[in-house]
Image: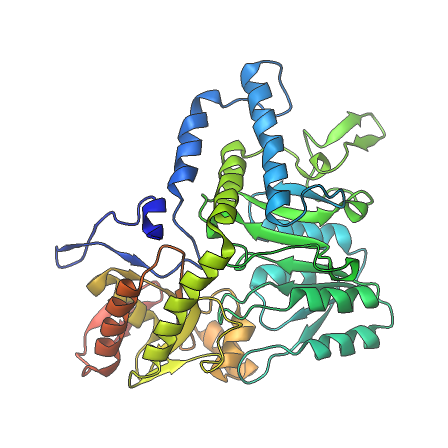
Length: 440
């Protein structure tokens, strides 16, 4: 199937600095994906019916409230929770907001222990540092974690571990984490599990129930803009029994049943956690995108993306002066996320050249996962700290992250340009970046 026909904007040409026009190649889907045409259409179809959600009496308000509620049902179905009364959907503006909410409502004090890993995105690390005691599971030389290390820390915690929070898939190496196995361990020692699904949900089927009660994921978070819907929407899929017993992190209109001089009565879940006017278009777009992915079928999605991923890794290994990170021999547990560098080439300038010479969009830097990237680069903590403080920014990588609409033909164009940049003589040109002048 030609999946490209399903997407908006991917064939719009851009002008390069030399004046030529080119159809761009977006290999930065780990940051943001383009919208599905069906998502664009549902926004256009509903723009004239925009009204207050659960606040007013009238056709538009009733219509939007109904659509808003149906979106929750679609999300529960996407995560294998249809006809299941254990979980609810809390709408957020992003994965980052969702994880901040959970950190602040589930952790009761600094003595609560939170286990996480050194491969996490900052969104699944920093919010928890502020509220509890962190225990980190380190990665091996290829960047993987060993879940036996998680059990060791659960045992050491002696019942004081409140949460185990892990990424579903790394945004640096694409490793897919065995979250149901980790859930079984967490529950064995009376801890809850949170899965940061931002990099996972658009690429693999997720059944939050697992095969038994012990494998059930307590909380899943994600952002819609990494799953073919617009910015500004995300969600927590969470167990009702824990949400019922906590107070909201955000408060204001829409989350209360009554407010008195000396007392506030909160509404029920999930509305208790959705203070303020909600993002109607973001919610219905998110639900539509996930429903369409379900209909396409994750077996088809995985097969398509794995073919391009393996093709690119195998050919990148053949290019002189290219350095790849993560396991490039066994790749079955990797999504289409490939981090690399070229010898004697600045990572940021390499990405700039790809964009300005061939219209290829990549990501350059540390991908909001600094501890993980520094480990993969073999950089000591002090050297990394000094690099950031000095403003030199010597340490980083370039990342390819694939989407459903990408093709082998695009991969070939990327590989040809990478070979050219990695092996051509230094032309001694200078390019201005956000960090100043870099000589290439």
